[in-house]
Image (cartoon, rainbow, N blue to C red):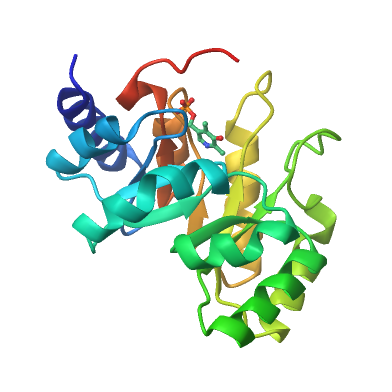
Amino acid sequence: MSISENLAAILARIDAARKAAIAPAPQTKLVAVSKTMDAGAVRDALAAGQRIFGENRVQEAQGKFPALKADHPDLELHLIGPLQTNKVKEAVALFDVIQTLDRARLADALAAERDKSGKSPRLFVQVNTGEEPQKAGVMPGEATALVTYARERRLPVEGLMCIPPVEDDAAPHFAFLAKLARENGLDQLSMGMSGDFEMAVRFGATHVRVGSAIFGERPKI
Ligand SMILES: *Cc1c(COP(=O)(O)O)cnc(C)c1O
């Protein structure tokens, strides 16, 4: 299967999941996760009409996306991996959306960079719904305080994002994230990957992040 065929198949599955869902989000956008893939693979996806991409490392994205964005001004790039404060300047310059705000110090750094550069990517707060010690994301009990903290700094928080533990049923994690978003007056929900995006659609995902089902398996590092 080619990248364009895979994309068409995923979009059809999102559409079918939306039709079967009782209360889908008004819109569900596909974030094509291109981490580890070369610029040629991204260009194939662009040729097929895909415009939203996700990368998990600032440095890798810096190597691929400036040229792609120059050719496609409507390309929208999302950071979906952890962001170190010493990479904030580069991240703010390159990404349209940062999905991984997970601590007050990072909110401070993003606000400082906004004040300096005038650039302020849209933000999602990443919630560690499984409370896994090794995983990024704010603990569920601290998520509302972080959303408030970011809003007080006039940062554009639009939604929540989660990566459920691999061994868990994702459904309760998606349901929890949707509830937490409602409680915080946030209408964007980034959840669901290649293995579970249809379930995420059922729980109201506005963004699903799909990599391997579009681009093929990533080399194991
Ligand atoms: C890699 C990655 C994805 C995509 O995973 P697939 O299983 O390949 O679809 C989604 N979200 C995040 C945060 C990722 O790091």
